[in-house]
Length: 400
Ligand code: FEO
View 1 (tube, rainbow, N blue to C red):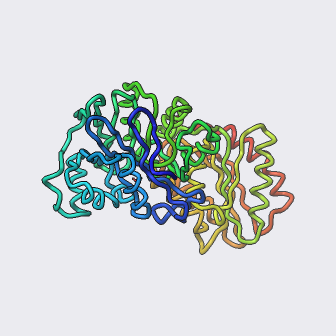
View 2: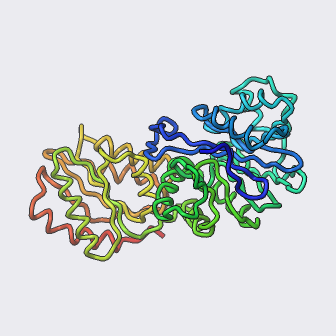
View 3: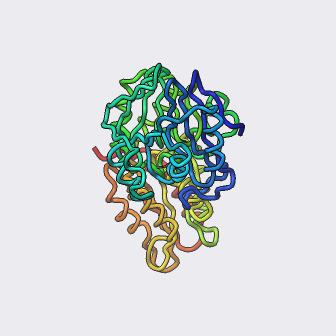
């Protein structure tokens, strides 16, 4: 990407993308890379909003220098101290010795955990709602704790009506040249946005709701997140999706089928069930828990109201990959879902009972009372029960 890209007036994109990273947080696959966004406002005073990951720090420093065009840097605004944004700050602070760092008190504590107290005299602590004038632009700092760490704040540029939203409204996927959402395929983009949201921020729905309430009181022209594209064309659609995700509301009343299958028998049942569900007009998606990364399974669990788990019985328990998926749903606090179970066991099938017991910890969830037990192979008599299984699942309602 060329040194810097103008977003509007004197707001310039100074971030960079990593196209080679395999796993974000060393955990989530990023087949299309990831971007670390940073923004520079060149008003009467100049300010950089957040840094980038160490992997692209050199590119970032070049972009900032290019955007400043020989001017001094006055402020470095630190919204979030996670190293995917802060790892480059030490170099930036050293490069611009007159720049003051602007952050929350909690961010200062984390900053000093990472870098020591060497820049304490350059740090300006701001409170929730405090403002900073850069000349024509006034920045308002809005605290957003646990979206996604406790020190997080977002920044509203009252003049340009931009919301610099930290991790909120971010997405996986590198950006190159076209940093806006204008030309992106919105369906594909929102799929990766949900995978990012559900896995990274999914646990903090209550806190995201608080941020959404604050954002609803602002006149926003575009959202500038720390990952992914700048959102301006699909603003209302993205806000609508965020409201659903924050409340754990599904986007579809249809069915997500997640199966484990060691030798293909349970897989046959899964695909036959998908046919029965589709034949009844409901949306259906199917994944093999062994071949699909768990981050995609979690994203689908956020998308669908109904989830069918098919698990073989393994060491007297749930198949490990299925169990890991269940544990992730619990860790992220998913709620208000309807589950169905199909188990397989050659001599002592146990997994349906165990899956239900484990998922009973989720709030507001219901369970279809139709459970199918396969004994080794998937047989005609099993297949004949799938229509009734699908009917019962689609008719099951949430617990009041
Ligand atoms: Fe993109 Fe929570 O860091």
